[in-house]
Length: 388
Image 1 (cartoon, rainbow, N blue to C red):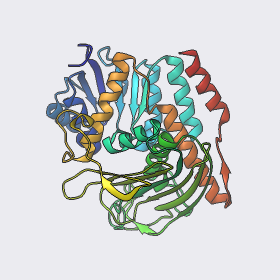
Image 2: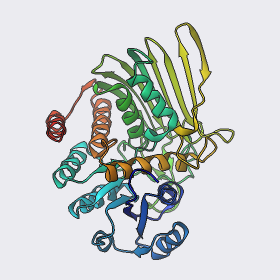
Image 3: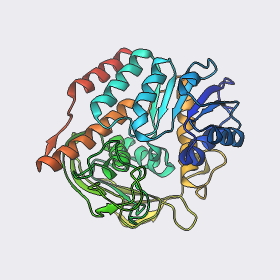
Image 4: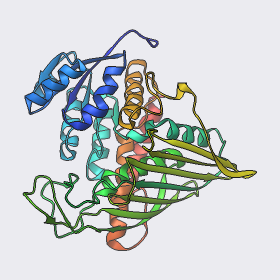
């Protein structure tokens, strides 16, 4: 048990596959969590996962769950278009909130949610799973402590062929989308992770230029009838980025680049060293970490100590559970112990701001400067200073 014996009352909205494989194992594994309830519009799903993970109550209406006084934090693990309204409802009920990404399709809405959370005095976290990879966290420490020196280049890649097969149902489509225009998809579903990782490691973006494309023009689309649908979904994006620090970036998100889950790779090159964190589940190992220096330019594997992994996990733990156990522990400790916030709704808004800038860049065929919402940055910085 950690510093306090108090447990945090948690309620989870959504009893789908991702809740089962990632979120709920994280709560069940942490002794500072009291898993109070699971809510789902299909009661059979909620009851099955409640029994599996030891939740004490089941709800089919999230409004009823938000009135439960034993619930202090709400986990929004539901389809994309519901993230924002459910998160706002939880904030209004005075609950701390973890939401899956993206929080909203437009950065302005995400910034609004971050403001409301600050005003309500509740803590937030966005489900940027890969911030909680032990390898990624080590790269970020090497950047912060100067091991890598001045950062020159950063490459963020997502190579996951999940939707290469047009018969595999596509799920990341906004309700009411126009199938005849290019619909941002991989840059949102996968790109938001990469954009956040890169910003966390290298700092704020100053400008981006991007190219978005539809490579597979006909697909099965969940919720849009039987058979193939002709749909202009963006299934691959590449972008260049410049940062306030002076560093340069290369970014790629793809639904169709052949590779295994989760397919994330972060490469950072500095004046004193270079690091590669490769989050690809291969040969029973969830991730690899490699490091090189100017006097030893051949990259070598870096093993991490057992303390880098959540208790009960190893490199052989499936990546959804490995990373989410870390995420859950961090958020619960932040709430119970008042430790500094990390990966908040504001961070989600900043990621979405870059997504919006890349989309704008592709449409207008030009570089787009950031931030798009400088007033939100100033407000968040002022709020952070006032709470010190």
